Image (cartoon, rainbow, N blue to C red; front, top):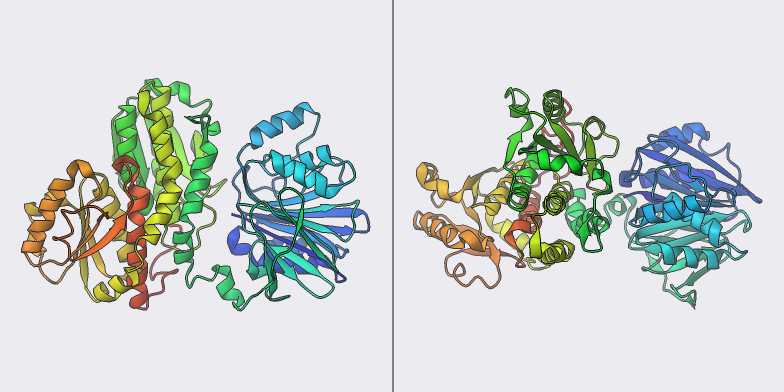
Length: 607
Ligand code: AGP
């Protein structure tokens, strides 16, 4: 996720662009840039790192004259966070500058075509194909060039464009990434969200997918995807700036829970092409797969639990034994790894000390290493032989949500990709791909199916302990559900393999600690039901997570959470969502600092 802004009017643009980028910095902050037009001259300034570096380079914008411009603050997805990869990107003829938020899924095909046509690329980004397509299609009319360019793009994009042939004008194009126009007096704006606009104007126009706008200081014209001019209503913003950063949500954690359908889509959609899972990043890696005799997944915290959830698909589809090891343990285990071991390292931040140490230890012993990371260019990403990014966008809340679900989504994709490469997929491939492509919708359903969670939180928030129980894939999700409850509500919670309760822990079960029972795996449903009856008979209140048509559990559970039915091999990213929301609302009831829980850090960079 990145942030884009645009301004045109009578004032100097640069200081306004920088102010807007500061308000959007939570959307991405590994590099930034502005392009400002004065007369027919476009000047571009870009930096690696935070907006502050750009302010320093441009003397708070005072060294860059001009009343029209666009700006960008980046969260790298394609290409490391460098000045070259920072936006805005310029066309070879210097006539166009572009900023982009989103992912161009067919950028490699377009890049090859443009290279063949003689265009020079200055960056590794997906975005740069846009500015060269504009140059290719421009015959004197910017709107026509925008339409032709947009018709070639697949994926998500919110674009800001300026053209030196049209001083005083900025263009905004929206497809599956947010883009809002700010309506001023003698000046107009665009931005990724209202955060960057409310200090200048509270009158905004929300563009919809397929629409684009031409803005000058005195006018805003909006067009649909056929180029027909349309009229849209102006909305008055009543949010304050701080609320706007969170998209109107009270906490970043809730915002990031709600972002999961989009985040999981961003992780999955670009990697399913023509009925196959295609990882551009794995090209040189796959030939070594037949020599792999063992896979070890290693990580910490929720990333470890993501490994626990994804291992089932990996092991069952690839037929390779999979071990999941805590990195803080693996690093001192004297691990038995060699050239026939594939180490999969999972880390949202890519900077977790234990995870880095385990990666180094196993790499030094000859293991092949593949990283699943969210932060582009992070230490884990640099150390691993091969890195696959989750493209979840910046995750501000300390307690991970979309970071976790996108890690599992990538593991699902890898399982199918590896199995396909090992000729082990057979006839189920198409059905599995359909299931994966439907996951974003299923996650949204899991959110929509549980409106009563805030009420359930009011009922359970005063309990001092919870048990999360489940079997197989349900147990893996119970581990993460338990951690979410602990780390943001400070209530004790323990995840337990349901079949293990009778070996001692059931001694603790009574009416004082509710049991949250995950019952979403038909293969072992009957067994989990028995465990629920066992804990019920010892007085426990049971909150069950299951399918709406699970008639057997309805008379047994005291309360219910529902998810849509999905193959249990791929259901973890759905099951966890109601548990994330339950933990969130329990913590809210208890007045906890949800985005910054006590004692925790977003990335544990020390041992
Ligand atoms: C998740 O809610 C926690 N904040 C924590 O367990 C985290 O998952 C763990 O520290 C690993 O972080 P990483 O994914 O950045 O390596």
